[in-house]
Image (cartoon, rainbow, N blue to C red; front, side, top):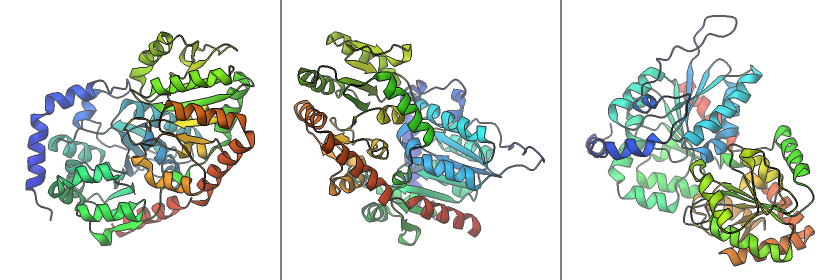
Length: 439
C-alpha cells in the first residue's frame, strides 16, 4: 500500500493552483466535448450495444497527452481496435489538438465497422474528486497510459476500483527524470499503482526503477514508434500533393515552436540564393500560432500561400504555410527533405520517424532529449543529418538538394532503420492481454 501523504500534499497544491490550472486548460476546447469533462463529468459508461445484440461492451481506456503521443500510439490504437472488436476503445487527451487527431483516427477506424468502437474524451484534471468520478463513470476494464503520463490521483482512482493499469512505451528523458526525482515520494506512490510498465529501453527502465517502480513489474520491449507504417492512402495523398506542387525543390519544417520559425525562414532565404525555386512547407506545431507565423512570413517579405485557404503555391511562392491539423505525414511524404522541429529550441524534439518511415531524408536540430534513443539509432545507421543553427541548416539543405544520390541514401537508410526495429507492438499487446487474463 503506497503512502498517502505525498498524494495528499500534491492534491492540496493542485487545489491552491486551481484558478491558474483552469485558465491554462480553458483554451484547450473541442466543440464535441464540453469543458465539464475536465472535472470527470462524462456520461456514465453504458457501452453501445453491438449491431446484432444488446450485450454491453467492456471499455479499454488509453490515455495520450497530445498530438505527438497520439501519432506515436497510432499503431497501438489500431491494433487494440482490431484485436478487441467486442470492446469500446476510449482514447483521452489533454489537448484539443490531440482530440482532433484522435477523432480523425476514430472516424477512419469506425467507418470500417470491424473493430472496437473508438471514441474520445478529455482526460480530467488530476483533482481527487474529478479523477474518482471519471474512472467510476468510464468503468474501464483496463487503463493504459502512454509514455510519461503519470497522474497520481488518476492512478490511485484506478487502484481503488480494481482497474489494472499499464504504462506503455514508457520513457523518461534525463530532464523529466531529474524533475521527477525532486518529488520522488509522490512518484513512488503513483508508480505503486501501476501493474505493468513496458519501457522503451534499458535506460528508461532503470530511471523508472530509481523512481520507485518495482523491478518485477518492468519489461523492456522497445519503442512503439518504430511500429508505424505509411498506409497506401497516406502515400497516395502525398503523391497527389507533390504533383500539385510541381517539380521544384521542396522541404518541410515540421512541428515548429516559438523561436524556431525565424531560423527556418533565415535558412530558406539563404537556400533561395542558390535554389530560387525552392519551396518551404512550414508547419507550426500549435494552431493558435498559425496567424502569428503567417504575420512573421509577411513581415519578412516572403511570398506565401496558406493551405487553410486553399491557396495554391505558384512558381514564385516561397512559403507554403500548412495551417491545418492532422496532415503532417502527408506533407512529409510530399517533400524532398524533412526538418523535424522542436529541435532548434530547447523543446526536446519531435518524432523523427514520421518522415523516415516514408523514406524522406531527416534533418534535425540538436535538442533531441525526447527522442534520444531514436536519434541514436538513426545516427548509428547514418540516417540523420544534424544542424545547430540557421546557417548549418541552409548549408545542409543546399548540399542535399545538389546531391540526389546522397539524399536518396539518407532517406533509404531511415526507412531501413524503421523496418529493422519493429517489434515492440507485438510484445506490448502480449503484455496487455496477459494483464487481462490475470485479472
